[in-house]
Amino acid sequence: MSAAAISISTKPPCPISPGLEGFRRRLLRQLVRCSVTSEVDSGLKDDLVLGDPNAPRFVLWNGKLLPVPSKPTDIPFFELLSFGGKLRAGFGAIGIRPPPPGHEETVEEFVRRNLGDEVFERLIEPFCSGVYAGDPSKLSMKAAFGRVWRLEQSGGSIIGGTLKALQERNKNPKPSRDPSLPKPKGQTVGSFMKGLSMLPNAISLRLGNKVKLSWNLISIKKRDGLGYTLMYETQEGLVSVDTKTVVLTIPSYAASSLLHPLSNVAADSLSKFYYPPVAAVSISYPQEAIRRECLIDGELKGFGQLHPRSQGVETLGTIYSSSLFPNRAPPGRVLLLSYIGGSTNTVILSKKESDLVEDVDRDLRKMLINPAAKEPLVLGVRVWPRAIPQFLIGHLDHLEAARGALRKGGFEGLFLGGNYVTGVALGRCVEGAYETAEVVSNFLSKYAYS
Image (tube, rainbow, N blue to C red; front, top):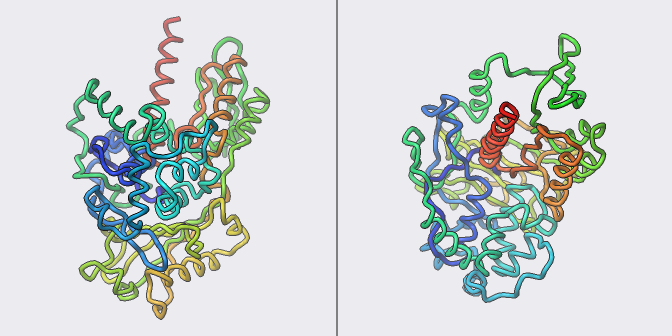
C-alpha cells in the first residue's frame, strides 16, 4: 500500500514500549519514512497535503475490520490480538524467546520466534502483503527489514536493541531540523494537491531540457580511461552521450540486460531478483454504500485496511484515498484504491481489467461495502506485470555480487540504484536518491582533483 502516499514523521524512534507496538512502529518507519527535503527542493512545499496522524488503520480478521494500535497505550485494549498473544509478544521483545538460528531468517521465522504466531499472522503478514506484495515465508528479514533485524543483533533483543539505539542517539544527536521543512504533527502519510505525479513533474520542470523522455538506453560502453559512452534510441534516431558516471535506477532485470556485455557475473546476479505482478484498482462508491459499522461519526475515516492471506480475500489491501486527502472525491462519494496480486497471486496477469474490478468489489462487499450497494464507478485500473522487487533470502548477497563484479571489472563510476537497492517504499527511494547523489558527487570530486 505504500505506492499511494509518502509517509512523513518528525518523531524520534519510539521510547521503550511493549514489543508489538515498538516493532510495528519501527517497521513502519523503515518502510515508509521519507525525508520531505525533496518537496522543498522541488518547490512543492505549499502543495503538500498530510493525512490525519490519528486516523486508524485496520486489519481484516474473522470477517471484521479491527483497528491496529496507534500508540503503546492502545495495546491493552485492542481486539486484534488475544491476551496470550500480547503477552507472548511482550516477553519475546525483551528477549524471552528462542535464540537466533544461525542462518538468514525469513520474515516469518524472525517474527514467529521473537513475537509469536499471532503477531505474525494478524499484523506482520498482512503488512508484508500490503507493502511488498510478497510472501513473508520467503522474504529475508535482514534485507527487507534491516533496521529491525539489527536491533536484535546489537542489543540481544528488540527492546535491548532499541535501548542501545536510544543511548547512541543521545550521545550523537542529529543536526537541528531545517526550519524550511514542513512540520507534520506526527507520523502520517503525505501526498500533493493533485496527486503524487506532481513530484516527478516538478523535478522535471526544474531540470528543464536535461530530462529526456522516450530515450531508450540500448548500450553502455567503457571508454579508455574514465567514463562511458551511452547509446540511446530516440525519436530523432540514435544519440550517443559521453559521461563520467552512470547511475542505473532501472529495474534489476533491465540493468542485467544492459550490463551483460560488460560483466556476466553482475548481469547474472541482477537477474536473480523476482518482481511479482500487482494491479492497482481505483473505484468510487456513494457514501451510503459503506457499512454502518465501518463509519466513524457518520463518515469513513482512516488510512485504510490490510487483508491477511488467511482471510479468504484476494485483495491485498485498500487505501481510503478520499478520507486521507482533500478533493479526492466529490461530496457524497468515497474513493478507494485497492491492490491485488503479488507473489502469492500471480494469476492476475491472465485476467481482464473488468475481472480485477469484479474481484476487488467482491472482496470489499465482504467487510466494508454493503452487499446490496450499487456497482462502483471505475476510475482506473493499472497492472504492473513486474511490480515490486522481492527482498528474498540471499538478496543482499546477490546485490553485493553484482557490485563486486563491477568493481573488479574496473567499472568505477557505474552505480546501481533504484528500489531493489534502497527499499521499495517511496520514502526510502527518495532517501536513497539523496544518498546516491552524494556518492556520485564524492566520486566526481575525487576524479576532478586526481
